[in-house]
Length: 159
Image (cartoon, rainbow, N blue to C red; front, side):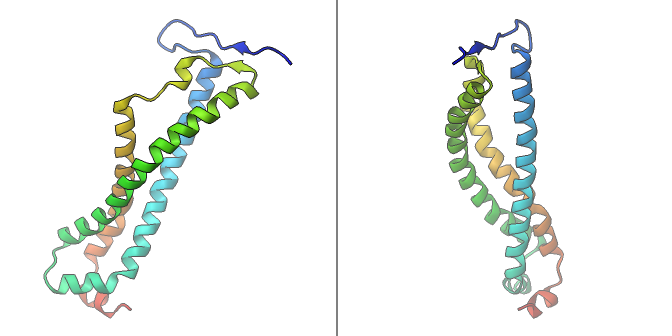
């Protein structure tokens, strides 16, 4: 078995070799794709939820609920789920990162520096959890506005 060759860290602002830069680029691309898919998933789920609750929203609107209150009600219902999922998903993602990245380095027969493995700071973790909340809010805005703009009579006819 060949010995692992260590990835040399370059001095300077990049502070990494070409392999580390490639891993960081791939990770950034996958992150963008995952955030996009998560946002579209939230959009889909909230859209289905608002269609199922069309009659309920129509009753609320007939009783005096303003469009702003409708938007807030729909967004808050999605935001709570997003916050809970962020709080559960971030620790799980951190555990997977610490399990998978060393295996990736071993399969490429390179030794990864500690800077590749120790990437999470407490403030970054909090921002990631809040990112789940942000994805949920942004994904819920379009269906919320659509529900708020719907006519009360059409919502009451829905069944």
